[in-house]
Length: 129
Image 1: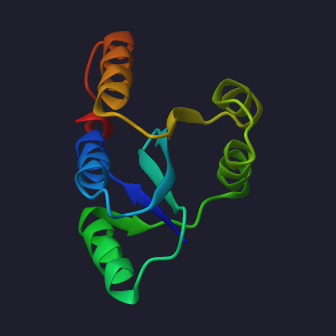
Image 2 (image 1 turned 90 degrees about the vertical axis):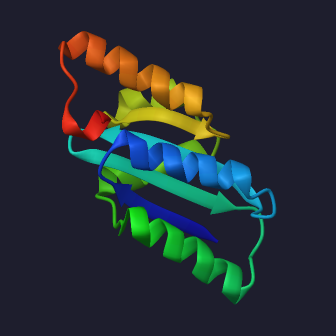
């Protein structure tokens, strides 16, 4: 089972990561976080299926924060490449996507990305709020 969502900003992305850490009963295999110019893509892949109730709860939480996402081919290929074990750096180079995290994301990774990006720009765009 997997969930692929589009979120408007870094704060919402951090809420998803925190929620998953707070719910160890959700059998997360990995989470991929990608930053795009106009928002964030979060993919949550589970190790095993969950009950219909748990699935509904996860979807309800994610629907409160973002929208279900149907990625363009370039992003689909990047997600598939990461899943097959290719290195994030190689995938970023090949598909021109900003992979913030793949695996077990930590708040610090997203915060560090946000700070570096803002520092480079000199201002904080809405998607990094």
